[in-house]
Image 1 (cartoon, rainbow, N blue to C red):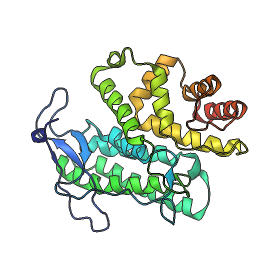
Image 2 (cartoon, helix red, strand yellow; image 1 turned 180 degrees about the vertical axis):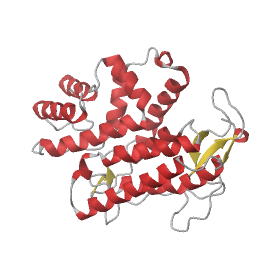
Image 3 (cartoon, rainbow, N blue to C red; image 1 turned 90 degrees about the vertical axis):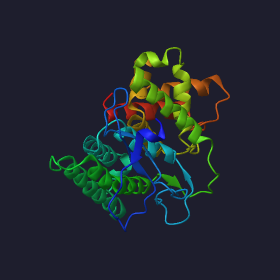
Amino acid sequence: MSAAASTPAEAAPQPAVIRRRVMYLRTQDRQNHPKGTISGIGPPKGSKKRKRSSSSLRTKQGQHTTAYVVFEHEIWSAVLDRTPRQAAAELADLADRWLALPRLGSTHADVTRIRDALEERKERLLELHRAPGDTTAEEIAAELDPLTEELLALRNQVPGTALNTKNTGGHGEASMAGALQAMEKLLRADGDDALDGEPPERVAELMWGLLDYNPPPTADTNEVGRFVETHVRSLMSAYPQLWAWLSDATRSQGHLLPWLRSAKQQGGYTGALWRTSDQDLQTVETDLYAHMGW
């Protein structure tokens, strides 16, 4: 998309929100995407390099378990090629999926606060979706921009999102997520044939590469399962077409764990969960299938 084809939607002042990204609306019809649909999300013109949204930790943020870029891609996936009105409904649906994350099932006061805040944002998004018919796309997008920041901040506060350890500066997550995002774009543009010849094993490896979590062998399988389920749900939201393609290619919705167990059995694997026993992984897999309804 050329710079001339899209422009950031201008937003009304939102003093409580630091503006780090805005939605870009197409200013003309482009291939199969009409004028007024969202071509992407990026920083406001002239803005400085943004920082991440607030952490779930009270101290300086440590390592993320599921890479932060995946949360950004969940937002991107929900709004891409949609009108701002449609995007509002999709983001409300995303908030609903976040409310189903395992870590948000607790009655702890902090968790209740996050749940209530997500519910409140979801209602605001639905109000935007139901805005009067004469409300312009630019006006709706202006309201959506700060809401996406608030959603990301809340997702980043979900317990278990980051571990209180030294931040090692990342492990190439951006490039792996970028590769998955590129495949998602191809599938949306050209259908399943776009990935002819792509090994499903490579896609699975990239998806596991976005999980930075290696508990000790003595870790409780229920705890491990919560991290795995959260990661899977995040991937499904960030790369829905790619997830469907991989499910079809492997004839299984739960393709990631069998791939991981196979990689560990072949030896040399040192990625996510490499210290978890095969027996424990099978338990996690069985529980995941039950929770996801597969």
